Image (tube, rainbow, N blue to C red):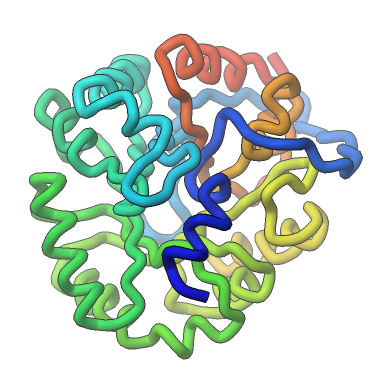
Length: 292
């Protein structure tokens, strides 16, 4: 499938989503959280074995993200920068970016007012070969006005043999990590076959995984996906959850979705794309209220 055709088909499937489409019909089980457990969006967590420490909640910038555009980037450079600043002022330190979302200039503007070393920059590349990945790494750093990137993911893997087909691009990221151009590498997956390949690959340090209790916009049903994520977690990989609100299908069941994510015990962190300050601050309050 050509990239342009794929983007048209999956525009609503890229990035963290607050709003979305029709709900799935999966029933949600009980989500037990240990008595006395307390969570905060601003908890400092370690991402697997990467050594990277950042906040539990990442600020997503890719709601309906495709073609270098998203709901967040539609706010304009200053508008999204203001939202990132607001999150920073409320204790969030994790920026979830992507070339596909077009959110690098907005994050660069935000970085003018926050210390670079205080935030974690995660971004994603569509490059599938060595030359393309090298070019992306150089361009991304220029767009973000930074010497290094914390996490670079190979965006939207679908093939069950992607770890073999895309080895040249993976090798470029490995070399970049050795040179301290990036701190960690990994992938985001959009099929269960690709997710299983990521779980088995020692190269994958960070995986951006779609997970919610109703199975909306996921690679398979929640139980199947969770079994793979447990293997990832056990192997020391950082699992960062996305589609936590089911691509908007759980917009009226946010507390249930957040409790589910926090009860799994396999997510190092998760990303949600708020579209204004009220949504962002409401998320922070809701996460703190889980099991309060």
